[in-house]
Length: 132
Image (cartoon, rainbow, N blue to C red):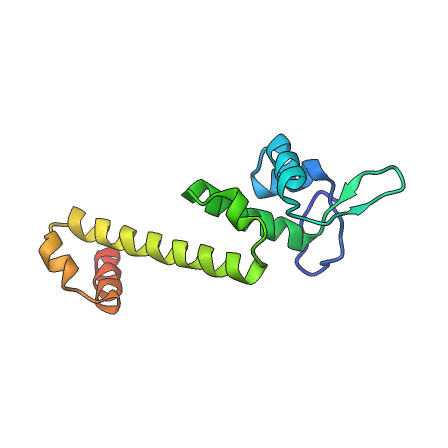
């Protein structure tokens, strides 16, 4: 069975242990999520092994991020990948914004000043700080 993810070959199949490892999810957790919420519809081999796709791994990564963020698995398990992608993108943008604010505060800019700045201005100031 394949042990590396290949974006170029999206038809490769992965067993549950490899999927869990690549997505950073405990194998038993993955099995529970699958049993309770039917997150995936994996193929089965003639020996009844479940086979997952690269797309399944990407979906699981997003679900894990959102669950770790505090979203209920029972709510997000059935969401389409496009919604999961938007939710994780929003989370990443928020995290980047918070990291920019922290950098500015750590460098002596008051929170009052920071709250008056737009995101574009924050990004420009952070770039200047990183150059020094």
